Length: 445
Image (cartoon, rainbow, N blue to C red; front, side):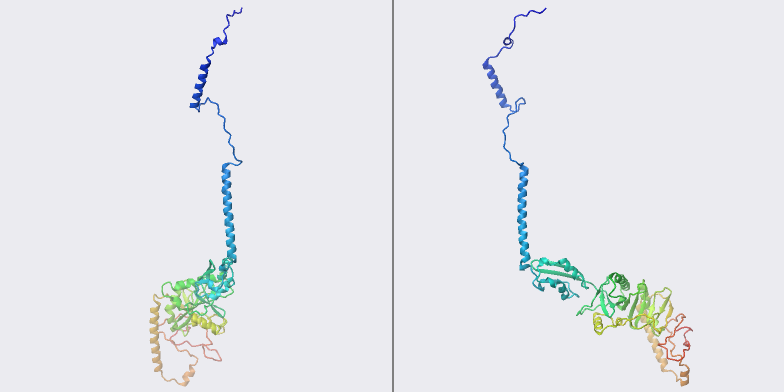
């Protein structure tokens, strides 16, 4: 059964309404609290004020501004450069007027006309249109020029610096005498120069061979002079010629008071072998009637006069070339060609046992010279007291025309096979064996 309801309670009775003035006061107090605490999390978001913005961001606008300024600066600079270039191209101030505007330094054996032959076409040209690299290459094609530098200076000056080659030897090329540096570059003798060089003359080169062929020969030549002058004796000053035609047999023409001798030094040990020649040259001149050449290439023997002296086959030097060569310092002995050939006449070759170089070749030479002077005095004394010889005795001994050499201060050479020399022997219709001289073992020259 349903429960009977009692009297009904109204909403107003359950929730009594407050007085109207008190509610208004609460609203006012609430507003005051909101004014104090604007950051209350229970407040609604206030309505934002709309701000009018541009079509581009601020950063983009800044970048565009700087870009426009940079373009303006570039444009101004470009116009300025164009104006300067046009002025420099057409202004007379930047034109090389004469050869006085070309400064050249470092000239020695290279003459100014040689340089101006290269730079002459630039006179009257604008300084900015002169090809400096091309002119540098053209200047370095002058034989005496090793390196060159070409520089321009505003407004209209050109400066050239020349570094010349250093000559180390004379070279006989056909009918000319030239100079060469350590690399094998051939150079003409300096015209009008009063400077003299003390170099030997190199044989075995020609103007048609490439630089790659002359360079190895010059390497041998540099090694030869370095060894000969290594101990301070300066033996290279006694040489008038160096034959480099055979790299395995370097031949030098040595000069001393007794004359010129062609010395074979081989391909190595140049100093020790040349010392042997210096120590025994006077001794060999006493042993043999002539000393033309010596072969020192072998370890256990020395061959005296091994070369066959043939006719001169190189073109002769003209008088003007010979005078220029002598004026430049070429030794007169080098102006005569010493060349081996196969002639009809031969010079006897003598084989001697190997010797060691003397510690002081100059002292040894002085002693040998004293001995040679004493021998000459004895020979003159013997000739003064020579008894009279009958005519029949002279006719009987006419086949032996050579007098027995003196052996007081010399060593008797070992027996060798000798070939007669028709050039030195007296003419005869029949060839007869020559009787050995007294005091010389049989078979000796």
